[in-house]
Structure formats: C-alpha cells, structure tokens
Amino acid sequence: MDWEALLASAEGPPGLATLRRAAGARFLERGLPSPRDEAWRYTDTRFLAQQELQLVRPVIEIDAPDGVHVRPLEEALDAAEPFLAAEAERELPFRLLNTALLRDGLLVEVEDGTTPEKALQLTITTTHGLAVPRLLVAVGENARLTLVERYRAGSGVCLPVTQLSVGRGSRVEHLRIHYGSSDVHIGCVEVQQQRDSFVASHLLTFGGRLVRNDLSFHLLGSGAEVQLNGLYLADGKQHVDNHTTVEHAVPHCDSRETYRGILGGKASAVFNGRVHVHPDAQRTDAQQSNQNLLLTDDAIIHTKPELEIYADDVKCTHGATIGQLDREALFYLQSRGLAHDEARRMLVDSFAAEIVRRIGDEPLRNELTEAVVARLPGMLAEAA
Amino acid sequence: MLEIRGLEAGVKGKTILKGIDLVVNAGEVHAIMGPNGSGKSTLAQVIAGREQFVVSAGSVKYDGRDLLELAPDERACAGIFMAFQYPVEIPGVSNSYFLRSALNAQRRARGEQELDAFEFLAFIQDRMALLNLQDELLNRPVNDGFSGGEKKRNEIFQMAVLEPRLAVLDETDSGLDIDALRVVASGINSLRRDDNATIVVTHYQRLLNYVVPDFVHILVDGRIVRSGDRQLALDLEEQGYDRIAARAA
Ligand SMILES: Nc1ncnc2c1ncn2[C@@H]1O[C@H](COP(=O)(O)OP(=O)(O)OP(=O)(O)O)[C@@H](O)[C@H]1O
Ligand SMILES: [Mg+2]
Image (cartoon, rainbow over all chains, first blue to last red; front, side, top):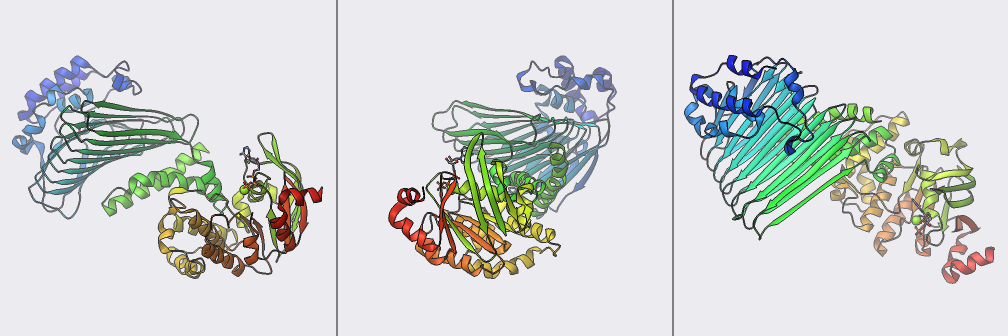
C-alpha cells in the first residue's frame, strides 16, 4: 500500500487542503500502529499495508427530523472550524488518516432549546475500498438529540470519525451500530460535554474481520453525566477491540460504563477502559464494568481497566468478568422443557439484552433486539 | 409410573445414592424424609436429569421407558417436573417469557398448538390466583431477587402451569411462612389427580398435615432404610432419625 500516492491523489474541499496536508504528513511520519505500542498490543493492523486500497465515497442515507440541520462539510467550513482546529495533531493514526483524506463529512447542528421528535439516522454503507466518513455534531444548550450511526459493510475498510459537542443542559442519546462480518472497521468517537449535560452512548458491534473503536468522553462542565454502554459479538476469526476513555476534568461528574461481549469460535476481543480523574475533579463518581461470555474454549478476551485518579474525594469502581454459560441456569431452563439449544440461546440473549434494554428509543431498541436474535444462532451453532 | 431399581449414583467418584428402590404409581403421594446430606436432592436431580450426577448402577423406568436415556428437557416434555430446593436466579430472562417458552416447548412436544403471549396470560390467570402470585413477580427476571418464599411459590406456580404427571418437590416447604405453606399445599393438592403422582421431599411433618402422603420413606446415607404410611412421619418427628434408623438396622 502506497500511502503517499493515496494521499496525493485524494480530492477534497480546497478550504481543508492545509489541514489535510498537515494530517497526512503526520500520518506518514508515524505510520500504522505497531504491536509494541501498548494501545495496539492485541490489535495488529499491519496487514493493511499489504493491501491495495482504493479510496471510495461511502453511501450515506440521511433521515433527519425537523429541528436538526444537516449540511455537507464543504458547505459548512466555518461551523466545522472548532471541531477541526486540532485534528492534524491527533495521536490516533487512523483518525489522522481520516483527516488527511477528509471529504465526505457532514455537519449536524441542533440549536439551543430544540427537541426534535425523532432520531437523526445516518446509514453509512461501505461495500469495498477505503472510506473515511466524518461526522461533526454540535448540539446547543438545553437541546435534545437521538443520533444513530448505522454502519453496514461488505469487505471494505471504513475509518469513521465522529465528533460530538453537547452544550449545557442538553441530552443526547448516541448509537453507533456496526453490522459487519468480514470488513475492517476502525472508528473513533470523541464527545465533549458541557455543564449538566447527559449523554447515553451505545456502541453495538456485530463482528468484522477487525473492529477497533476508540471512544473518548470529555466531561468539561460540572454536573455532566455519561453512560457508556457497549455490546460486542464476534465469532469465527473475528477480532473486536474497544478502547474507551472518560476524562473527568471537573468536579461533580458521573460516568457509568457497562460493556459486554459475547465471543464464539476463535474470536478475540479487547476491552480497555481508561478513566482519568484530573486533580480538580473532586466528587467524581465513575463506575466501570466489563463482562464477557465465552462460548468456546478458543475464544479470547483481553480486558483491562486503566484508572488514573489524581483527586482524593472520588468514587471509582471497576470490575471485569469472564465466564461461560451458567450450568445451573442451563439445567433449570432445560428441566422445564426447553431444549439445550433453546436454553443456551435464551441465556446468551438475556446477557446481551442487559445492554440493549438501555437504549431509550423504542424502535431502535427493537431493531437491536432483533439484530442480536438474528446473530446468535450462528454463533451458538459454531460453539456447539 | 416410576420404577427405580438398585439405583446408585454419585459425583466425581463419590457415591451418594447407594442402592435405591422406589416404585411410584399414578395417583400416589410419596414423602421422602432424611437427614441433611443423605441424598434426597441427589435423587430428585437424578430423576430430573442433572448430568453432573453419574449413575453407576441400577435403573429408572418411567412409564416403562428408560428414563436415564432422556435429556432433561425430554423428561420435562414427558411430564416430569422437579421443584428445586434452591431455585436458580436467572437475571435478564423474564419469568413470564421463560414460562411461556417452556410451556410451548412442552406443547410442541405433545403436538399441541403453541400459545401466544395473550393466550398465555389468560391461561395462567387462575393459576396465579391459586398461588397468590402477584403480577409483578411474573414480569421480573426468573427468581432474581425473589425472597425465599417467593421462589418456592414460583416453583409451584410453574408446576401448576406445566401440569406434570410426576412432580418431585424438593423441600418446597422450607422457608415458607404458615400462610404461604397453606397456599402452596393447597396448590399442590388442587393439582392432584388420579393420573399423576407426587414425591415430596421434606424435613417437616407439618407439610404432611396438608399434603397427606400415601407412603413415607426414610433416606439415610443413600439408602431407603424404612418405608411406611404417614404414621412413620409422626414417629420420626417424635423419635428422630437415630432411633428410626437404628430400628431399621
Ligand atoms: N456436586 C457435588 N459435589 C460433591 N458432593 C456433592 C455434590 N452434590 C452433592 N454432594 C454431596 O452429596 C451428599 C448428598 O447431598 P444432597 O444434596 O443430595 O443431600 P440432601 O439429602 O438433599 O440434604 P439436605 O437435607 O441438606 O438438602 C452430601 O454429602 C453432599 O455434600
Ligand atoms: Mg436437599
């Protein structure tokens, strides 16, 4: 893969040329992450260098309710400026690459006090090639938004970056759903929250050849609260890596993180949950839990909490579990007449439902419930 | 209906049941009593098909079929039900969804029409009333956070819905208050028919005042050391296992 040639040939809005060049230069300087890099220890992306990737424009379907303004990035460069200002200095290689190839961006704005009745839904399809969608979302003060990013993939490589800024007193429910199987999906979500804002983040991924998500939540105003819910399903030889970071920068903020994984076949997964409590962030309440259900002996999970706490008056808890299906529970269900397979499916399904039920929007909750139900039989059959 | 001959069973090389003979006919109620650790729950679980207990000798026939050949769910579909001494909590699975799925699995096995959510609710109404079960318990996850008594009532409620031919109730009376005991006992009694049978495992004569057994068996150290009628339970209450067992020896 000749990255230099790719960067040179890529087209984009002239107003972003400087930014793109700077990000491109930095990406070339750093290259793809190496497994020696702690954050990429279990996720090897070097095979991408062996491929000949063509840059493609993803197909983006937009379903926007009243009160939500969606513009192509090139028509909204002024409004995008605060989001993009520091993008050429980022650490994450794939985020730099996204910036270096930036073209298919959308800017979403929700004005102060606006409460749209329905969700903003974006369905992004990448069937082949390399796609770098970018989504910038500015939610004003005392507003509401339900935002859905739904990624569908064939065998391509998708490197989506989403930046979300949530104003004072606003409430946002954000779903990032990835329906993948043999694709590469390396995504990034960055959320900035002002005072008294609330964000429920749901990350749901159904597999892929290699999936990596880096999510960071910056709690910048007192009273901000974030819920991080995650569900990852993988089997075969799939690999899913979720790295989350919560930055408690100011006092009196809450974070509640619950990530669950179900792994079959020879799948591997990584969960790395970083919680960073800054020296001023007294009265922080941070909870983290990561639970994993392994359906086979060959499935692997690397789970790691990473707590950095520099304030003294804080409540931080974390816990991780790795387990198999509860035999007692299986026997109980079977003893009432449920066949072995049905009993297993019911238990695995309920494990996943613990995350799905947290989705506030009912049609979306139903969509995900069905997606889990549709995904499980294959995973369970393979594990049987 | 149930015919157990020379049954030996254990776990991890440890023999727990050391030769059990027991015959249960349709229409009968059998009580099994015995000291802690004597193997009562093991016997119940072997009948229900818990694979962790390995049968090393003997046979169990159910309606003439080899019961030990059947998977737990096949036994359930054939009409066997065990009320657990320690009902399992299953967070995330709603009680009503679970029970409807179980009932439908059994109905499918019998070639009957499955019930949809609506028909199921109608079907269970009077059974809930019978056991004084609140709607709330139906919508909660299976046994999750239920009190001890609620769990036991939930077991008998399941039995009332599934209408087994052979019910094995493992210490269903333990942990019930007086009123709950009456409710549960009347539940058990109202399900009694000529064509079904019940085995109650209990430590207390108290239950047997309500659910009157035709036979009482005393299980000590993996063997039935005495069998008799309900008088045996009364004698036991007075004299204790040592003397009853000694008299048998
Ligand atoms: N999984 C197991 N592993 C090892 N020992 C076991 C296991 N299950 C049961 N046992 C042992 O087998 C014996 C019989 O147990 P069981 O539960 O059948 O007794 P019980 O008669 O039901 O007692 P209780 O009146 O206390 O309920 C006990 O000594 C018990 O410790
Ligand atoms: Mg017992």
